[in-house]
Amino acid sequence: MTQSKQTSAEMSAAIPASAAPPASASTRFLRVLGPVLWIIGLAIPSVMSPAWITIGGIFAIYSIVALSQDIVLGRAGMYDMGHAVFFGIGAYTSAILSLSFNWPILWTIPVAIVMSAALGAILSAPIVKLRGDYLLVVTIGFNAIFVLAMKNNLFGLTGGADGLFGVSGPTVFGHMFGTQSDLFYLNWVVLAIVLWLMRNLDRSALGRTFRYIKYDELAATTLGVNARNYKVAAFALSAGIAGLAGTLFAMQLSAVSPGSFQFTDSVVLFAIVLVGGQASVPGVLLGTAMMFVVPQIFTEFAQYRYLVFGIAMILVMILRPQGIWPARKGAL
Image 1 (cartoon, one colour):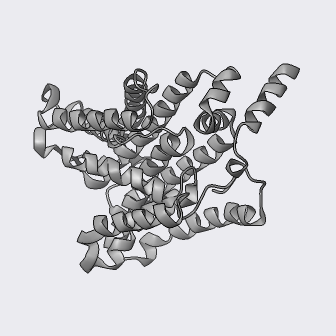
Image 2 (image 1 turned 45 degrees about the horizontal axis):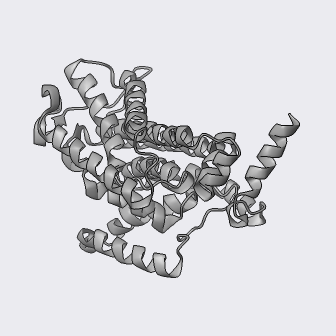
């Protein structure tokens, strides 16, 4: 027991001071502000137009995917530029089971999560020893292969380039989630669950180990951490959450197609984490809002959102390399 405590203390010392600053008044304020903003968000279907209700639902979905990307990039420090693959696996799994095998959509959610997590573990196991650009290039290849397989109607189930249509919302206690307002509430509740999971991950031994590996993998390995296994676990966990978001996405659009999971979508997720702030939940949410909500305010310029986001990314990397909202201990 004494040796275990000593090892934990040594590993904590291996992290830079900036990674774990003491809790501050602003941190405590954020812990209150987050739930308050989430509760205020519940009023969106009552006060906003149908278009904004849809935007709110999509924001919740992409926030979940971006948070899952942040597990790999922001917490474990691995360059994953193919994260849209796991998002797509979740969406296609639910759509195929629902449309081809007549499964209730709710029953498909656990399968989508497990399938995505399993694929994340399988694909990452042989590549997690790669570093930096090498890992990034391999994950780009995974994304290209996935899109090509979906376009070629894999096993005659994926619908080819046109995809699959007719995915319906779930039925819970006899209530059919068929409207955009219903789906918004569903997405909003799932977002809250994921935010709770992220908070607990940051406080857990698993989350601390991810940070040890990110900041000093050699020191962590010297102290007995199996870096490879933890990196695979990070990929599997992030992929499972992305798969969950994929199911929500399929229900939101009532369809899935390869065009929704292209390499550019993975780039956007990667950029959201970098611009918002790695390992910062508020930063990731802010980055997602900049990408999917702000352009709707200036609809006439919405087609330029990639250009604007690219410029913002360049400026942030120059002026605030840690992101718009850098990570703080306990800042959720």
